[in-house]
Length: 575
Ligand code: GLY
Image (tube, rainbow, N blue to C red; front, side, top):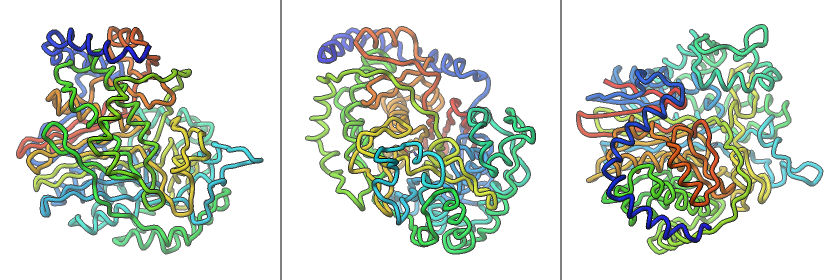
């Protein structure tokens, strides 16, 4: 049935050209409104901002405000990004924090260059590729819960490296909003309240998590209740102005290693001492006359570039945003992108043929496959709920930062060191536990991404900056495992191809297809007609309440617009 898709798409596309192109703007307004209603959003609640000088987008209002506070105090975008990351680690402690890691893409107005900072977690030095085998069989749960699931955190080293190289403030200055939120309490948002309620049975088994995230009677807190993280506040203060030294070489490293080992893990003080963030060369590729910059491997930024490359000759604008031919084309391109994602991994351990993957020849072949593809459609499987958070900052000097930070799945390894208040990641699950064994995001394990000592696991996090005439015009990032890749792609298309403002682009219903399992996840806010049309084309679809969160900023001198994603309580702030 799928082999007929190319002609079907073409026929429907031609018929759609006149009507849908004219209606696309109208449709997007209607669909956005519908999306926000479906998410339970108050339509008058605005997650966007229009500002003259600077904008911060984060996954909650407190984190965005932290960034703006630092900008108003004279900090630049890098200072604000570090402040926002630290604040998000408090207010979205379910998603990210000092016990995790991330990627940061920076445009420096001073040098006119892009910089990619990798502070992804690493496998412990004693790790082996069979460490998650039990009685000769792979046991994925061991990679998701408990001490063995923890990879060496990179967050503190990364934030320190970014601040030291491009910031203007001391660590304690940029940590001040996070310390305040942790010490004095912060109201719990809907996303975090939902996560805590869902995870309450597991949280109650960990004394550290239980003491912070459950009430004295063991019940889950409600939206708006205050959460206090006093131990975490004290830890942030104890990091002083040389946080990487304190975190990786002192008492804290010994304490965290002992805690992880007491819970079955293998991380030692030698792992902390050996951790280093890596400055990498960003990847970039032209798209419709603009240049798109992304993180290189072990991120999945290259996959976003490949997907854009496959879409470019089709001139999507004529199809009408979220029209059936548009969505069908996206699905096929996403599927091919995920086929190639299997070639990505830590470049220090495997040769990632990035020049080939981004070459016109390869992208044309992938595009050809996208138009003549025929895969069996196995049973649909739900996307997993997740940790991870995005943030983006554009300042008045022209600096731009997009970062994505994570402890992997919700509450990471489900372990909090009770002394430091640090929640430890379960990033080992982003490796291939064994060939063919899916991780929490249903991404099947491949040999390139197998575990090795000191290796970084492949990530879907894809901070992205679009450039016109050498200057950033769009910053986009997302959270939500593999839906980051497809979410970032769709928001870039909404802005570049359809000239939408960030709020409309972010709100628009999205789809996700990752090849295996071969099922198209469609947000329920997508109009029923589009869902029916895709089913009639033979796609196996599964309607989900919502996919991952994406935030965006569009940048013109004196005219900045940002939008956080209402799906997760995101917010933009600026002045
Ligand atoms: N931990 C999710 C990712 O990096 O893709």
